[in-house]
Amino acid sequence: MHPFFQQRLRLVLYLAAWSPVLALVSFAARADRATSWPRAMALLSPAMLVFAFACLSAWYVCRVRPLRFSQWTGLGATWATASIAAGGLLTAIAWLTASAAGQPAPNLPLLGGIGALLYLLSAGVHYAGIAAEASHEAEARAAEARSLARDAELYALRMQINPHFLFNSLHSIAALATADGPRAREMCIRLSDFLRSSLGLGNRESIPLPEELALAKRYLEVEQVRFGARLRVSEEVGPDCAECAIPALLLQPLIENAVKHGVAGMIEGGAVRLVVSRAGEDVVIQVENAFDPDNEPPARLGIGLAHVRRRLAVRYGERARFEAAPSGGVYRVELRFPCESPMASNNRV
Image 1 (cartoon, rainbow, N blue to C red):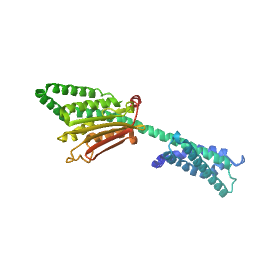
Image 2: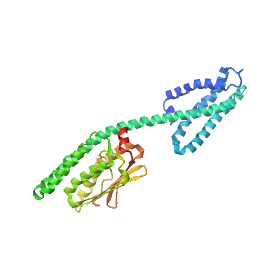
Image 3: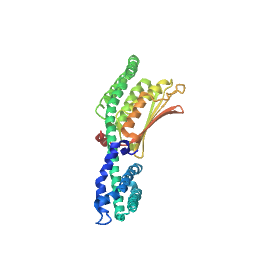
Image 4: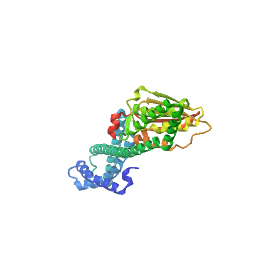
């Protein structure tokens, strides 16, 4: 529904704004100089009232046909047809009104041309309004994204330093300390590197994709020491993905879920596969892990995956896609979002 029809005051102000337009058009399109200006306005008032409502239809056309220079030819034809039809509507009603009143018809060719121009002007105003609305929505999404980013940071740090994760790590270190000192020392070093790297992201909304992948690798290295040969990791990263940015700590919940709900629940262990590729202007990230078929993953998303999906929706809107589902003994999570340069991504936040 047109925004003007949602509030009566808007519609009243819109119709009031047509009063000076009516005066100017009546003066310009008088049948002859002998016709008084007030009489010309009275004759054109019904036509201009209908025409004012007809101009509101431009809003629907603007929604269906947004400004895209790649489709400029078709867009021009659409607006040319619409403006001519609007001008014809104005002249037809003006002629009928004059005929019914027994008065000379106004200058119809001039009136039709003015009507077409006014309709195009209305289209321009509607495009500007839609652009302003989109800008406002983008600013609101950016503000919400900043807020969610802070929440995501706290949430990610909570996952990284939560008692369950640290308990398992420290328990593994304690068990290794007496049986395999070098291995215990290695796990301490990797755990320290991971925590230091993740804590260093406090002030950053987005980071280069290679940096996010390096952080995910450090986390998997910690788990690799704990699970040993039970955890197998494979990574495939396209060469044209390094120039893209990613919301900081976006992959952390996906990797942790893959280990926690996949590898940890299998006696023989399993594999975690990370695939990053480009699809046109988008980045596609897939995280796959094997799981025990006897322990089906929940149908509903957990807190971590739901949080990732929400961050994508707020940051990129309808341009982002999130899918998560089991298939053939493998649980796959796929993210798809626009590739933004790290510099452009930081500037927008």
